[in-house]
Length: 241
Image 1 (cartoon, rainbow, N blue to C red):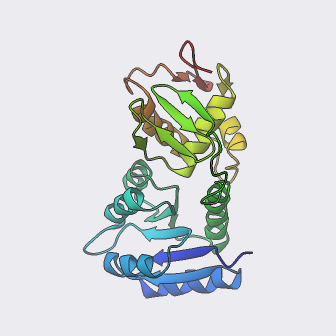
Image 2 (cartoon, rainbow, N blue to C red):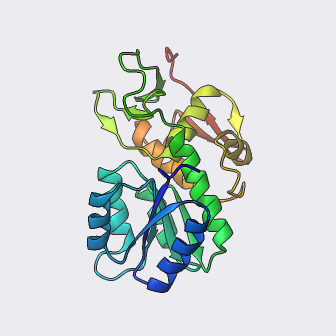
Protein backbone atom coordinates (compact mmCIF):
# COMPACT_ATOMS: atom_id res chain seq x y z
CA UNK A 1 0.00 0.00 0.00
CA UNK A 2 1.27 3.44 -0.90
CA UNK A 3 2.11 5.76 1.98
CA UNK A 4 0.20 8.46 0.08
CA UNK A 5 -3.04 6.92 1.36
CA UNK A 6 -3.82 9.25 4.23
CA UNK A 7 -6.83 9.15 6.52
CA UNK A 8 -7.92 11.95 8.84
CA UNK A 9 -10.13 10.94 11.78
CA UNK A 10 -12.31 13.81 13.02
CA UNK A 11 -14.07 12.86 16.26
CA UNK A 12 -14.33 14.48 19.70
CA UNK A 13 -14.01 11.08 21.41
CA UNK A 14 -10.29 10.32 21.94
CA UNK A 15 -10.98 6.61 22.49
CA UNK A 16 -12.65 6.32 19.07
CA UNK A 17 -9.86 8.29 17.42
CA UNK A 18 -7.20 6.07 18.98
CA UNK A 19 -9.04 2.85 18.07
CA UNK A 20 -9.38 3.85 14.41
CA UNK A 21 -5.83 5.17 14.25
CA UNK A 22 -4.34 2.00 15.69
CA UNK A 23 -6.35 -0.30 13.43
CA UNK A 24 -5.78 1.57 10.16
CA UNK A 25 -2.12 2.19 10.95
CA UNK A 26 -1.53 -1.56 11.32
CA UNK A 27 -2.90 -1.95 7.78
CA UNK A 28 -0.51 0.55 6.26
CA UNK A 29 -2.49 3.78 6.29
CA UNK A 30 -1.05 7.10 7.40
CA UNK A 31 -3.53 8.37 9.98
CA UNK A 32 -3.95 11.81 11.55
CA UNK A 33 -6.43 12.91 14.19
CA UNK A 34 -8.54 15.99 14.88
CA UNK A 35 -10.92 16.54 17.80
CA UNK A 36 -12.82 19.52 16.36
CA UNK A 37 -13.49 21.56 13.26
CA UNK A 38 -10.66 23.93 14.17
CA UNK A 39 -8.25 21.03 14.58
CA UNK A 40 -9.48 19.56 11.28
CA UNK A 41 -8.62 22.76 9.42
CA UNK A 42 -5.16 22.78 10.96
CA UNK A 43 -4.63 19.16 9.90
CA UNK A 44 -5.77 19.94 6.36
CA UNK A 45 -3.29 22.81 6.18
CA UNK A 46 -0.49 20.46 7.25
CA UNK A 47 -1.31 17.61 4.85
CA UNK A 48 -4.34 16.94 2.68
CA UNK A 49 -5.75 13.45 3.36
CA UNK A 50 -7.32 11.12 0.81
CA UNK A 51 -10.24 10.18 3.06
CA UNK A 52 -11.78 11.89 6.07
CA UNK A 53 -13.75 9.95 8.69
CA UNK A 54 -16.10 12.56 10.06
CA UNK A 55 -18.22 12.09 13.17
CA UNK A 56 -21.59 13.82 12.92
CA UNK A 57 -22.27 14.50 16.60
CA UNK A 58 -19.58 16.90 17.73
CA UNK A 59 -19.85 20.10 19.81
CA UNK A 60 -19.62 23.56 18.23
CA UNK A 61 -19.35 22.62 14.54
CA UNK A 62 -21.11 19.33 13.84
CA UNK A 63 -20.09 16.86 11.16
CA UNK A 64 -22.73 17.98 8.67
CA UNK A 65 -21.47 21.58 8.80
CA UNK A 66 -17.90 20.38 8.36
CA UNK A 67 -18.91 18.10 5.47
CA UNK A 68 -20.37 21.06 3.59
CA UNK A 69 -17.18 23.02 4.23
CA UNK A 70 -15.04 20.15 2.94
CA UNK A 71 -17.09 19.44 -0.17
CA UNK A 72 -17.00 23.10 -1.21
CA UNK A 73 -13.21 23.36 -0.89
CA UNK A 74 -11.49 19.98 -1.15
CA UNK A 75 -11.52 16.96 -3.44
CA UNK A 76 -11.33 14.32 -0.71
CA UNK A 77 -13.34 11.26 0.21
CA UNK A 78 -15.77 11.82 3.08
CA UNK A 79 -17.18 9.03 5.23
CA UNK A 80 -19.72 10.15 7.83
CA UNK A 81 -19.74 8.28 11.14
CA UNK A 82 -23.18 8.28 12.78
CA UNK A 83 -25.15 6.66 15.57
CA UNK A 84 -27.19 3.60 14.65
CA UNK A 85 -30.48 5.50 15.07
CA UNK A 86 -29.44 8.67 13.22
CA UNK A 87 -31.16 7.84 9.92
CA UNK A 88 -31.96 11.48 9.14
CA UNK A 89 -28.34 12.49 9.73
CA UNK A 90 -27.12 9.77 7.37
CA UNK A 91 -29.49 10.97 4.66
CA UNK A 92 -28.49 14.60 5.12
CA UNK A 93 -24.83 13.60 5.13
CA UNK A 94 -25.19 11.98 1.72
CA UNK A 95 -27.15 14.97 0.46
CA UNK A 96 -24.36 17.40 1.39
CA UNK A 97 -21.84 15.30 -0.53
CA UNK A 98 -20.48 12.54 1.69
CA UNK A 99 -19.23 9.50 -0.23
CA UNK A 100 -20.36 6.93 2.33
CA UNK A 101 -21.39 6.49 5.95
CA UNK A 102 -20.62 4.16 8.83
CA UNK A 103 -22.79 3.55 11.87
CA UNK A 104 -21.60 3.14 15.46
CA UNK A 105 -20.80 0.67 16.86
CA UNK A 106 -18.88 -0.65 13.87
CA UNK A 107 -16.58 -3.54 13.11
CA UNK A 108 -13.10 -2.21 12.24
CA UNK A 109 -13.11 -4.54 9.24
CA UNK A 110 -16.19 -2.77 7.85
CA UNK A 111 -14.47 0.56 8.45
CA UNK A 112 -11.47 -0.58 6.45
CA UNK A 113 -13.69 -1.94 3.65
CA UNK A 114 -15.49 1.38 3.28
CA UNK A 115 -12.22 3.34 3.31
CA UNK A 116 -10.86 1.05 0.60
CA UNK A 117 -14.04 1.46 -1.47
CA UNK A 118 -13.83 5.26 -1.39
CA UNK A 119 -10.11 5.14 -2.15
CA UNK A 120 -10.69 2.93 -5.20
CA UNK A 121 -13.08 5.49 -6.65
CA UNK A 122 -10.69 8.34 -5.92
CA UNK A 123 -7.73 6.50 -7.44
CA UNK A 124 -9.67 6.01 -10.67
CA UNK A 125 -9.17 9.70 -11.31
CA UNK A 126 -6.23 10.78 -13.49
CA UNK A 127 -3.21 12.24 -11.75
CA UNK A 128 -2.98 16.01 -11.64
CA UNK A 129 -1.43 17.28 -14.84
CA UNK A 130 -1.99 14.01 -16.72
CA UNK A 131 -2.90 14.15 -20.41
CA UNK A 132 -1.92 17.79 -20.72
CA UNK A 133 -3.12 19.17 -24.02
CA UNK A 134 -5.34 16.19 -24.72
CA UNK A 135 -8.85 16.88 -25.94
CA UNK A 136 -11.20 16.11 -23.02
CA UNK A 137 -13.81 13.47 -23.64
CA UNK A 138 -17.20 14.85 -22.72
CA UNK A 139 -20.63 13.28 -22.72
CA UNK A 140 -23.92 15.13 -22.71
CA UNK A 141 -25.87 14.23 -19.58
CA UNK A 142 -29.20 16.01 -19.47
CA UNK A 143 -28.61 19.74 -19.38
CA UNK A 144 -24.97 19.19 -18.38
CA UNK A 145 -21.80 17.67 -19.81
CA UNK A 146 -19.61 15.07 -18.11
CA UNK A 147 -15.85 15.14 -18.64
CA UNK A 148 -14.61 11.55 -18.39
CA UNK A 149 -10.95 12.59 -18.28
CA UNK A 150 -11.16 15.04 -15.40
CA UNK A 151 -14.22 13.58 -13.62
CA UNK A 152 -15.98 16.95 -13.74
CA UNK A 153 -19.58 17.93 -14.45
CA UNK A 154 -20.29 21.19 -16.27
CA UNK A 155 -23.47 23.22 -16.63
CA UNK A 156 -24.67 24.31 -20.06
CA UNK A 157 -23.18 27.77 -19.51
CA UNK A 158 -19.80 26.24 -18.70
CA UNK A 159 -19.60 26.48 -14.93
CA UNK A 160 -18.48 23.44 -12.96
CA UNK A 161 -21.04 21.62 -10.80
CA UNK A 162 -19.49 19.79 -7.82
CA UNK A 163 -20.05 16.04 -7.76
CA UNK A 164 -18.79 13.25 -5.52
CA UNK A 165 -16.87 10.24 -6.77
CA UNK A 166 -19.93 8.03 -6.46
CA UNK A 167 -22.05 10.52 -8.38
CA UNK A 168 -19.47 10.53 -11.17
CA UNK A 169 -19.47 6.73 -11.26
CA UNK A 170 -23.27 6.66 -11.54
CA UNK A 171 -23.32 9.22 -14.35
CA UNK A 172 -20.60 7.34 -16.23
CA UNK A 173 -22.50 4.06 -15.91
CA UNK A 174 -25.75 5.65 -17.07
CA UNK A 175 -23.98 7.23 -20.06
CA UNK A 176 -22.43 3.88 -21.00
CA UNK A 177 -25.81 2.12 -20.82
CA UNK A 178 -28.37 4.47 -22.40
CA UNK A 179 -32.00 3.37 -22.68
CA UNK A 180 -31.33 0.30 -20.51
CA UNK A 181 -33.11 -0.47 -17.27
CA UNK A 182 -30.48 -0.85 -14.54
CA UNK A 183 -31.43 -2.40 -11.23
CA UNK A 184 -29.84 -1.18 -8.01
CA UNK A 185 -27.86 -4.40 -7.87
CA UNK A 186 -26.58 -3.86 -11.42
CA UNK A 187 -25.65 -0.25 -10.64
CA UNK A 188 -23.68 -1.37 -7.59
CA UNK A 189 -21.84 -3.93 -9.70
CA UNK A 190 -21.02 -1.50 -12.49
CA UNK A 191 -19.83 1.18 -10.07
CA UNK A 192 -17.79 -1.40 -8.12
CA UNK A 193 -19.62 -0.70 -4.87
CA UNK A 194 -20.32 -4.26 -3.84
CA UNK A 195 -19.83 -3.40 -0.16
CA UNK A 196 -23.33 -1.95 -0.27
CA UNK A 197 -26.52 -3.96 -0.22
CA UNK A 198 -28.69 -3.85 -3.37
CA UNK A 199 -31.62 -2.49 -1.36
CA UNK A 200 -29.58 0.19 0.37
CA UNK A 201 -31.50 3.44 -0.23
CA UNK A 202 -28.25 5.42 -0.40
CA UNK A 203 -28.19 4.94 -4.16
CA UNK A 204 -31.66 6.50 -4.40
CA UNK A 205 -30.44 9.52 -2.45
CA UNK A 206 -27.52 9.99 -4.82
CA UNK A 207 -29.75 9.71 -7.88
CA UNK A 208 -32.10 12.31 -6.36
CA UNK A 209 -29.09 14.64 -5.94
CA UNK A 210 -27.99 14.01 -9.54
CA UNK A 211 -31.46 14.84 -10.84
CA UNK A 212 -31.27 18.24 -9.16
CA UNK A 213 -28.06 18.87 -11.08
CA UNK A 214 -28.81 17.57 -14.57
CA UNK A 215 -32.59 17.78 -14.92
CA UNK A 216 -34.70 20.80 -15.78
CA UNK A 217 -37.13 19.55 -13.13
CA UNK A 218 -36.00 17.09 -10.49
CA UNK A 219 -39.66 16.40 -9.67
CA UNK A 220 -40.35 15.39 -13.29
CA UNK A 221 -37.08 13.79 -14.46
CA UNK A 222 -36.66 13.22 -18.17
CA UNK A 223 -33.11 11.87 -18.32
CA UNK A 224 -32.72 9.58 -15.29
CA UNK A 225 -36.11 7.93 -15.11
CA UNK A 226 -37.47 5.60 -12.48
CA UNK A 227 -38.78 2.32 -13.83
CA UNK A 228 -41.23 1.24 -11.18
CA UNK A 229 -40.38 -2.11 -9.63
CA UNK A 230 -37.22 -2.46 -11.72
CA UNK A 231 -34.67 0.33 -11.29
CA UNK A 232 -33.50 3.35 -13.28
CA UNK A 233 -32.98 4.15 -16.93
CA UNK A 234 -30.94 6.94 -18.55
CA UNK A 235 -32.70 8.44 -21.57
CA UNK A 236 -30.44 10.79 -23.58
CA UNK A 237 -32.08 13.76 -25.20
CA UNK A 238 -32.32 13.80 -28.97
CA UNK A 239 -29.00 14.66 -30.57
CA UNK A 240 -26.93 13.58 -27.57
CA UNK A 241 -23.94 11.44 -28.45
